[in-house]
Image 1 (cartoon, rainbow, N blue to C red):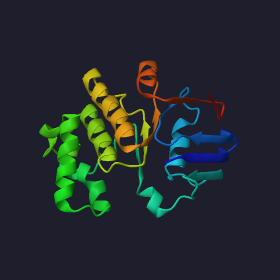
Image 2 (cartoon, rainbow, N blue to C red):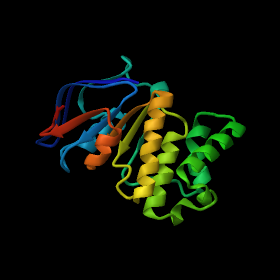
Image 3 (cartoon, rainbow, N blue to C red):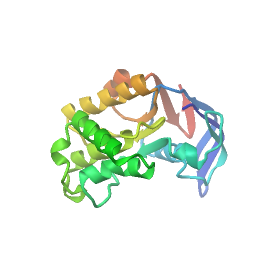
Image 4 (tube, rainbow, N blue to C red):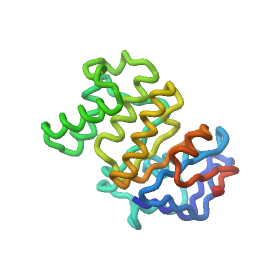
Length: 210
C-alpha cells in the first residue's frame, strides 16, 4: 500500500507540530522514521493510521481516501503495548476474529506466528501477567498475524533483548519480501535502520528530510 500525504499541517495550540508539503511512503518498502523526541513522529504515525483526524491536509492510500475497508488492511503497534485482559492466544487471534477469518484458519495462523516469534510457551498466559518485553512481542505478533498491507511500528523493539530484536527484524523483512507489506517504523537504532530500512525519513521542525 502506497501512502501519500499532501499539505499536512498539525498544531497544538500555538505550536506547529507538522508542516509537510508532500510525502510518499513507497509500497512494499520498509521506511524508517527518525528524529529527536517531541518532533511529531508519533503524531505523524497517528495521522497515517487514521487515529487523528484533527489536521489540515490530505492522506491517500493507493490513491484512495481512508475508508473502513482500508482500515482493515492496516495496523499500528504502539511503543507501549495495548493488550486485552485475555490470554496471549486470544490477543493474537483478535484481529483475525474481527476480519471474520474461519476458526480453523485462525488457529493455524496464530500458532504459526507464535512459533516464529518463539512465544508459544506464553499461549495460555494472561496478558496482564507478561513482562514488558513479552507484551511487546505479543503486540507485534498481533499486528502481523493478519498480514496487513500497511504495518506501522512505533519503536517496536525498544524494550526487547538482542535475540528478540533479531527475531522481530527478521519477521519485518520477511513480511515485506513475501507479502509486499509497506512498513513504517520509528527507531532510534542506527544499526536497525541500516539492517532493515529501504528508505529513511528524518522529521525535524515539523518538516521531512531525506
